Length: 347
Image (cartoon, rainbow, N blue to C red; front, top):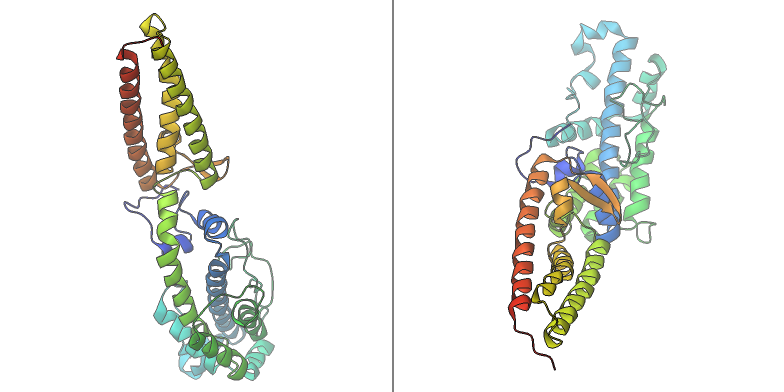
């Protein structure tokens, strides 16, 4: 599906999987893992988003199970204030008001009440608590018909919240991330002392991590993927090739001049090393291979190529590639003319 966006994407659009290569979530994952070395922050944000999704699905399915087991509530809505006063919005995960209402309901929900409703309701087919890999389609997405059958209760929501706490937030945790102490203390108290597991527990930490990624990582990601199409290894390779080619071109040019090789048209062969050298050096400077840009190809990893599907990014890369090619040809023509028309003098 082609994107009709006429601008560069925002970080939230990337994290919400609303973008296409080369500015998709998988590309951002590779950038955070290989270049920023801050993958734990991205995984934390995604795990919290998955926890919020689990909470929404739990409440939605809990409400549905009550309606199925007691169909008279469908017409007598006032007799079930516990659930029906919570008007759950449909799949509106980025709505802060929705998350606040969801958290308010979960804070009033008790394990006893949940057990009582479950005893009269049917099993809920909902996803397990673990976040599926975003590097592939999510077969456990609750919005798909192929979801894996799994009965989720309040203890699963609790386990999801504790997993986030013990994995990312406690001192000495396996994948500890750096957050301000007041935020860490607030989350720890909410989960371990107050027994909370609602989305509002993590909302401050989630916003803090989002702002950090938006400020420190996302601009570099856009420069790398929306304005260029090469990974750092390829950029360095082009620098080496370009320097070697330019050395060879200058060596051949001065040799032809000071040996006074005839005919002078022989010097036109200098176009080959100069073309390779200038092309590679400018590609290194802009982190953009113009031929790949015109072909609509970019790199995920070294020598790992993929098609550019984000329409605005593709147009941007084509324009930059055309400019780089014109600049390359202008510099090559200038160098060849200079060394072709210089009079020869045999030493």
